Image 1: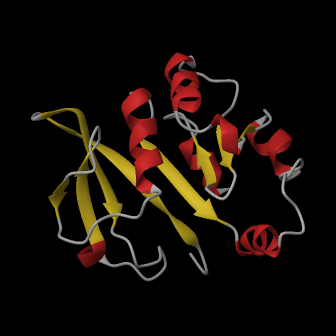
Image 2: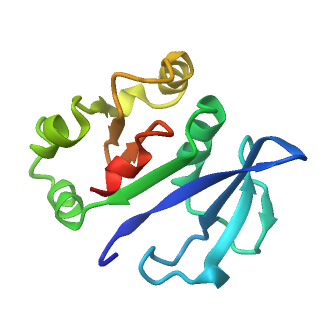
Amino acid sequence: MHNLLGNLAIRVPHPDFAHGVAYTKHAEVSLEEMTIDNVVITDIPTPRLLHGTVPTSVGHNLNREILRLRPDVGTVIHVHHDETIALFASGAVKELRVLSLEFPYVMAKPPYVVRADDRGARLRAQLAREPRHSRAPSRLCARGGRRPAGLDRAHRGLT
């Protein structure tokens, strides 16, 4: 990976934790710079660190919530594309209607765009009621990156 901001959370089953545990990286290091020393393990329902001493970034909270509400999801991949960050930071646009031409071809379905006012309770409610094979294999969270959802679909976010 090169110049990639974001994070990933990998669910690993654990006999002492009903939701499993999440392997991720701690805050203040990029995905391309991280090493095994930057890996931390958290509880899924809470941000409690089970391994490591440096806390995770704030983005891990949404990753944990997706893992908590969707037991069929094994990995949450959360990335920020440099050019998209620059575009939103410039203030030139407030909303991104077209994400990429790859969605119809690679994912065969359009993404679900999470608007700023959809966060919190409404987003949690929607994630909780989605069927295992959701109509939206990926979510774009404004200022929050792109998150593929679904155990059999997470790898598609890397293509």
